[in-house]
Length: 415
Figure 1 (tube, one colour):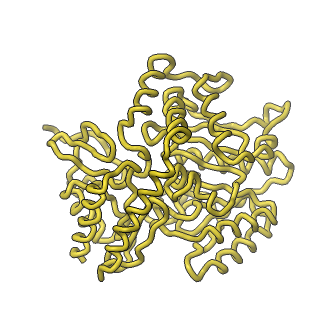
Figure 2 (spheres, rainbow, N blue to C red):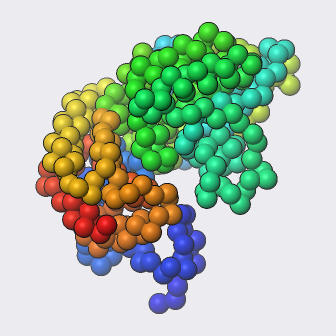
């Protein structure tokens, strides 16, 4: 069999690491062409909330595909998008009155940045400076990379990235330092502050307190700086509540959603905005319109999947399942925390993380050994350097959780 022509993301093909061929999936299980059942311990990159091939999501996709598969969204509309926008208005904070569709987490952030800059331009007081948290990650398009941490991920593209002002991460004991830095930056007429609420994902599953998030929002309000919440990973129950911002009593000016928006079944994203952000772009002058779109904006099939996801949230005890999974994760993390090779065990809702051995960056020597170790045990776990995290679908069984945590315990012997 000739080598595949596929160029995979975040994969060094020169290392000749095996790439399993997945044929089908169900719940928290992936099935491969060579007959293995693999436990999906990270929700296939944080997207699958209710489980793979969920009947309600699959049925909605099939039914919509038979009716209307795609239509331009500039100047046209369709029922799945209108229903989804109304459903999001009903589910999300009432201050977020407007729904702009896109197709990925990265593009939802790009949209948010463009909304913020357009807001200030059309008010007649253009501001251009974006504030971000250290260690943040917001995607891999040029704008999203610009507002993320600089390092091996984006070194080659540095000439294309725009400058931002970085606020120190408010880790335990450093909260006031971060808040003081944010206040100094806000005093100088910044345009917006972009933040992953409560937990930084690709930056190493770094957790900070709801109290700090609330204080960050208060500072931005005091100085008129737009507050953008990137809830691409944290929404849809991952942190224990529908939105992470809920735990701090925070409502952002602009909210980014993707991943679990469709239950993880198909790509879709939205950027929700308050009425003042929308009205800054509203008027009789065509030059004030919001200049952003993609060919697949508000794809009807994706919107139908998202509507099915919202129906699951409305009609099923999703938060109870999340609370139960959080409890089961906590029990297993507690048992693992005493291992001498484990450092900084932590949990937020359904997300659990720890370091094995001494801290190392994304390219640590331990990372590929951990990846191979878990793959050989039929587990989809993808460590961030030596940070191992567990973020499974909410339907995962006790038996599969035991498999995951037993493998992590055995992996500690690699250091």
